[in-house]
Length: 164
Length: 164
Image 1: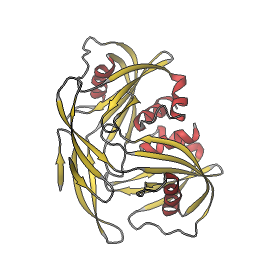
Image 2 (image 1 turned 45 degrees about the horizontal axis):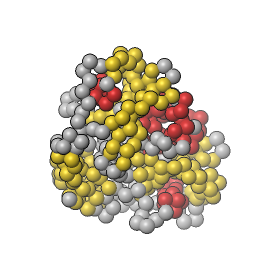
Image 3 (image 1 turned 120 degrees about the vertical axis):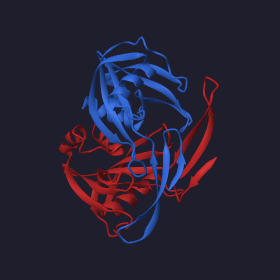
Image 4 (image 1 turned 60 degrees about the vertical axis):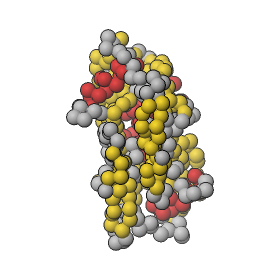
């Protein structure tokens, strides 16, 4: 049973039968797919500091965004990188995908390493977003994951897939 | 406005005002907090293969579970490790926390490295769960993250925080 439908995100309530035979109610969130991108230039990369309403705080993340209906994830990655950083990627290397929280959502996030960056002529920041672009030495990423300066799960997964 | 309240998870619809002045509707999911644990024994660790209703598939994950009302995360970690693997941890090393998906949820997951494992006398598997415990050489974890055998975000973050 659908209990909410937004422009993208929908929420469904399901009755499931456990191996024990017990019936339980489970909620499943369908946020649609998303992408996250690590743009790299020489020894540095770019992250963004962004205000997130859900946590009522600023957080350091990789550029990311949601896949439009029917859009290929790599097209989303090109578009979101431009919208969030003003940079265009000459090369996007796919780094697989992850499930963000499979206990209650089917959300998948596709990961990309971006190279051959250049300023985009199509740059127009999305006015829904409060974003500051930050240049970070690649060698600082692991220490930042370790000490909790980076706490965003998709960003940590992206760093793993790109650097490990 | 609350649009759903389950036993643990609740969902709220908020009207927010963007920097541009536009009003928008956002949904925020409050699943409560959770923990994930990497139990290590010699050169190996234990993961679980678990059926997840939200993705209608089995997935390889670290033992994990949700924090009960008022419970300390480290207490949850002890309890969930026993419930999911039958092992008790002599030592739980805190490895910080992560936000699973701060675009639409405030869920935090606390991460622990478990050592000094012994069989638990309190072992009784939760009948809500369909779980197989799998012993994995630690040296295989990075290749499994890289090639997509491990796609669960919290498990990748936990491996990063424990091994990097």
